[in-house]
Length: 192
Image 1 (cartoon, rainbow, N blue to C red):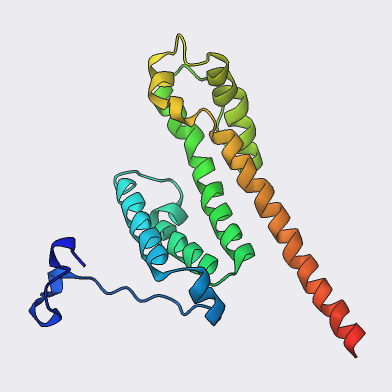
Image 2 (image 1 turned 180 degrees about the vertical axis):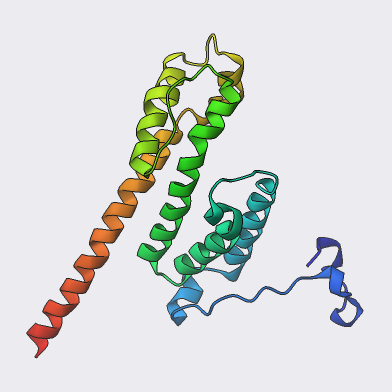
């Protein structure tokens, strides 16, 4: 609801004064105490703001062009439903798709100053490229004597490390969910 309408009686509100968001039911009553619905609304609003900033970006990836907002919202739903491996897998997929776009964008902005090829196929390839040809050289300068493109992109100097962290969490989460399944099987065998 618009802040200036908080004290307005409901019958006096117009459709433009509020928005109705349908959220997934939480998995159990303990979740209601653990999380507030305000957090869900906050993150959903942040997703709208973030995706609006990308509205004029021409992604090569059809996934990013067509599914970014939906996947981010699905990730938030998974998190609040306490499906953490699913949330990590979804955010990893988004990060992987973005990681494959970033080197090409950097090369375009660098306008020929980076010659190395960017035909990358995996998150690992992208992390290695970013580390070797952009992030490490930029971090090595310690924000001194930066070229024009480096000055423009200096906030990205740790993106390789952030992407690598997401990759590690994705891999751990995937192996843990498989382990949890095996532990359930063992418990069932012990009980029977």
